[in-house]
Length: 265
Image (cartoon, rainbow, N blue to C red):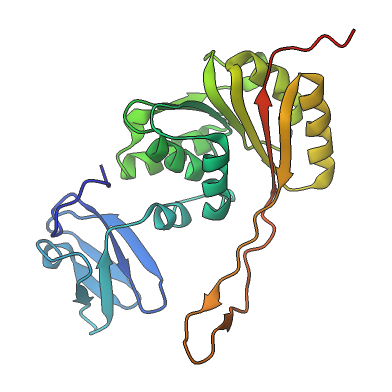
């Protein structure tokens, strides 16, 4: 597992090589293999035994720094065919929904598996992630991405339409990354335990409104809608200022709690 490292780099470790502009390559270290980049070739054998944080020089004389990959780097470097959730959204999703060790959560759809990686990391050895996807090519890609970080044993991948409901019951949380989550709130209700957490992400206000209507219709409460904006600053002491680009709106986040059905009569 990529969280268990020794003080020096070992064969089989998942490593990150970062260039001066923070461009990274993430790969598993295999004796005899090479990494080819536009800044030169790096031999895997030359990395084995080096301390983390070491400088490594390519055959063209270009420097790289050797790191343990962070979860942020893994998500941003995920191989993808679709847009993944940004770490700024993922972190807020996890703390808001209480995703931690021992939690059982359903996710739909899987996509490239960016959120799946973060959820698998968070639930620990005693929790589990059940992730649903209807596109075979995305299903396979997500499984490959999870195998890279060796957390696939914490995830059950399901190539299945959720229209007829989820296989699991009494789970702690459900998160939907779908264009029409409002069509599946009844199914979510059946899968969630009372007091369980629901979350979704949507790009437009019109979709959020439809979802709010269905959440109220299905007796969800403690509903929240928000968006996360992230602004970096240039880390230069003599002229500290915001960077020219900002990671602004990526989606509206909607959260709710499953409560006892209320009879309004």
